[in-house]
Length: 130
Image (tube, rainbow, N blue to C red; front, side):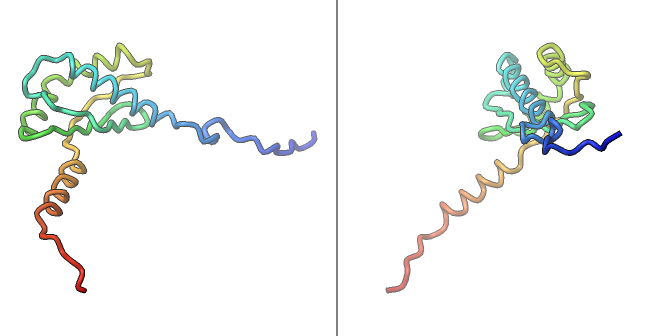
């Protein structure tokens, strides 16, 4: 039997398309954000879901969130209380083999960026020597 010559074709996951895990991350982020709008809990006011990181086997997902103003701890507590509802929303709306178990963490990048902005704002303006 003759050897097959490679025609330069690549496997579908190498075509530079949006990887599956990244699509699942974004889908879960959208579902959780939409469901948060439906939850009537004052501790979740001004909470933004910034990113979701789902592990490849879909068993767990880490949800990064930020909250404008104070009350990050209360928001984290409220998210943990509503975890089952949020997982249920993912199960209903996403067609996945399994529903990931959600864990929540404060998005430190937002906090760090705000701190840097504050430091730059408070810094006295420097003028070049003439």
